[in-house]
Length: 264
Image 1 (cartoon, rainbow, N blue to C red):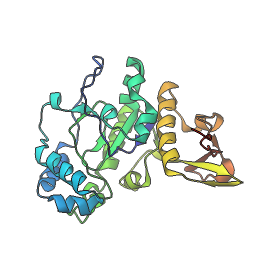
Image 2: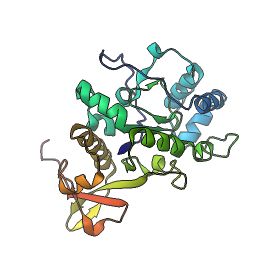
Image 3: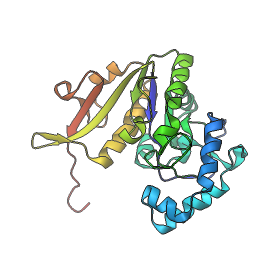
């Protein structure tokens, strides 16, 4: 199976000290180049409005857009799995991957991106910020969902065929999973949802859900999970499969809500 993750808004672009990781170039170069050109025409104030950014973050995003070079050298970029630095990726702990585990991740893990479309873990990215939900006008429509159309699904089809798998495990957020055109997608698409239970009621809590996505992705890599059905029988970070709350392709995992200890 292939595993999908969302990207992270925060980045760690410090040089990677992993001689076993050979950076690869992102694919979908034509689309990346087109989006990069559009972004260069976006002002600081427009970036602030597009993604609800502070003035400082909008200025940084603008500067990165101006410096972005689709054909830039790999030396100035960093493999995506190690560059993304949000809650999902801190829970995944890519820095602790063995060479064999990293190779498995390169083959089985795919990272969705507003700018790059679909990234492999070793694909070297430059600093950027472009959220999939941003309503960035482009020749194909008013937002990035229109821009990407079925291209992300078609790339995933090709990756699944190359890996000889017919299932995609979706651990991406709704914002990013929405960019995968299900009508064009050939593999089965199974989404996991993570909830915290308290007083008999289960609900999604954003921070915990993000961490759970990272932990489940890492569990699948570490244990070489090839069929999502295997996850129904295990407990990962306290989450267990809840059959009564699940649907055919939308599986719910629940754990007792964790509360901070007093004085912590």
